[in-house]
Amino acid sequence: MNLPLSLTINGVRRDIVLDDPRVTLLDLLRERLDLTGTKKGCDRGQCGACTILVDGRRINSCLALAVSHDGAEITTIEGVGRGGELHPVQAAFIAHDGFQCGFCTP
Image 1 (cartoon, helix red, strand yellow):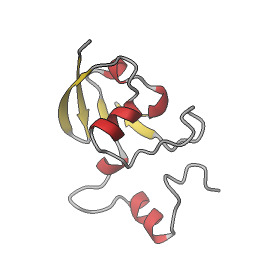
Image 2 (cartoon, rainbow, N blue to C red):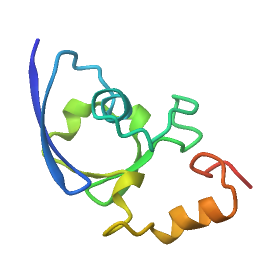
Image 3 (cartoon, rainbow, N blue to C red):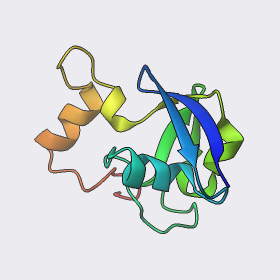
């Protein structure tokens, strides 16, 4: 089964063909598109390590099927910096030795 999918990821339109309708956005980003900034933590939507923005709203990508977001605009951590400059959140994690995404770090 070939399922065509069009997503704008970090400002770049991507036309993708999925062979399985059960592929999550997390697995699509990490395994097919090599965007590994989005992490697989609990894989149950509880830890927040897989957080991305879809059409400006925060979601857990481990719980979202890729096919249900056809036409969406997605922003991952790789897409928050501009012009080679780190986003302040990215810079703060580096400066303070933040773990992974830091969602569960007190």
